[in-house]
Length: 193
Image (tube, rainbow, N blue to C red; front, top):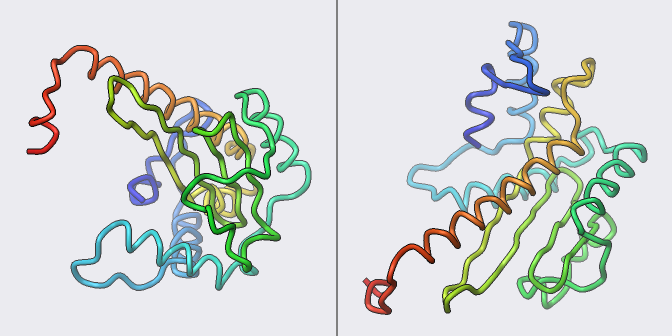
């Protein structure tokens, strides 16, 4: 969300890329296509869920990933230790919703790390328990599809590298959380307050 708000100052492939007026108009048109109208006092979680529903309803308006891009994404995921799987995270214990089943790919590394690739959306998370504290690193995004459509004439945006960078960043955040937990004396009463 914040990334899209600051898209005019976007940095891609170690280059600073200033959006032209034409591209800014194209971005506005893309966002108007997929983003629902916000409600007052709406939480970010509700807003993201409404975007996801909007993407499902308007998925034919998004350019789909071609086979070459999917192969590159799968290769990057494999390099990161994430393999295709039929097992699902506990949040999906009842299964993937029927409408999304045919267009959802799941990858995992054990029972605690998952990547879900859906048309118009992807999700990654890794759970660990450290010193009796449950920690989750997590990201979900629809922005690659927006960026892909916006920058399709350029070679600046590579969706497989974008995904790989976010997974690596999420893992680094997890290591940082572990260092913080190791560096402080946590009392159970601290967690309750």
